[in-house]
Length: 314
Image (cartoon, rainbow, N blue to C red):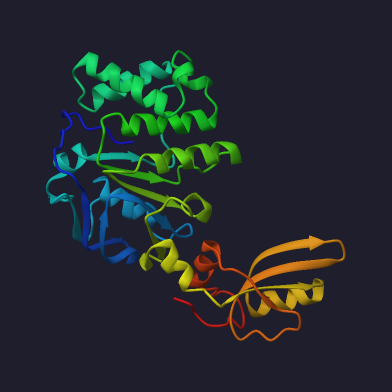
């Protein structure tokens, strides 16, 4: 988590924009974590999808001014992440996947300290914001509880509370639902979708469901490159007419796995219902089915490791 020591800027602008200009990161040894990247992000929740190692965290750390680009830059409301870090940080709230809190402090003591680190010097205003964000993340009744006694989901919500405490215009969340049970994952996911409005929320995940209903736009990354950027509807259009299902047996399942992209397997007594993505498949009993965002993600990513892959969909 990043905390800026100077007072946050209270903006009067009606919109916020993030613009990447050939943003690039290459590590020693010639490892290209992020290839030259050009994107324009505006208000709303933007989902950042991709497997581990796709470059998502590197990209977010550069945008959060914690990692310098190798080349190119990004502008947050016109402020350069390389040369105007204090100005960018005054607009920023960043929650990494792994973050530390103070276990011996109570929830409200922890937030109060984080507010001070964020430059919120007026105690009355700081307390009012604390009350607001605690209610927002549904932790008001736990404000006196020690941080070390919170559940994993509560700690994640407290992390979100401290991230939005100083009312940033750009929020960056790295795998915010990682390690949470299904109920807590839904709660956090709904909270993040509610935080949209007059701010940009960049949410990185490898779980398609985390952004399926709330993302205004989706960026899919693979090997440091954005291979798709658009809306959920546009993403699903990529795979329309290429989603199927068939009832088969174990031998048929093995054949399908070698020829196409199996996205779901449901065993029903002695038979197996297989859902898959692909084209040019000629199997008896194959039926079309509606495409989902997860289907589109599988198609765009491409099953390059599978023998006899049926062609790239990106």
